[in-house]
Length: 111
Image 1 (cartoon, rainbow, N blue to C red):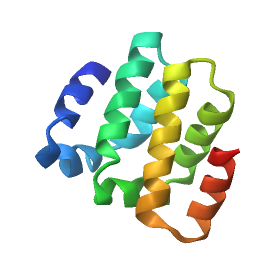
Image 2 (image 1 turned 60 degrees about the horizontal axis):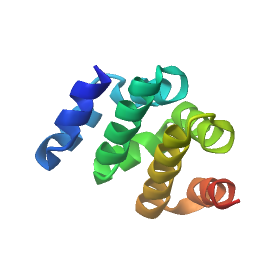
Image 3 (image 1 turned 90 degrees about the vertical axis):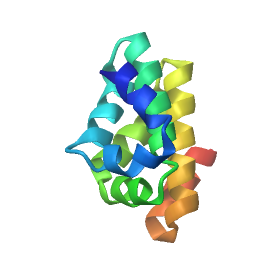
């Protein structure tokens, strides 16, 4: 499933629709956190692609659970690929959203 979502996330015109489907962003984040190595890589890359969309940036920023998982993966993750994807996703959220929450995220990602 993560591979399929990654392939679909390559299509820019579908990114907002995919990100708004059910708990897509949360489920991808869970796969980045606890999936197999292949699932982590595919889910992480899909998340990085999807978060390029402003609608998805706003959706993700509103979901504190997802933000906390991504922060934990970025700080403590064992997979280098998962860490890079989590950091890349968080940086795009910070750049796209701003505000107090973005400052908190940026402070944790930059250290």
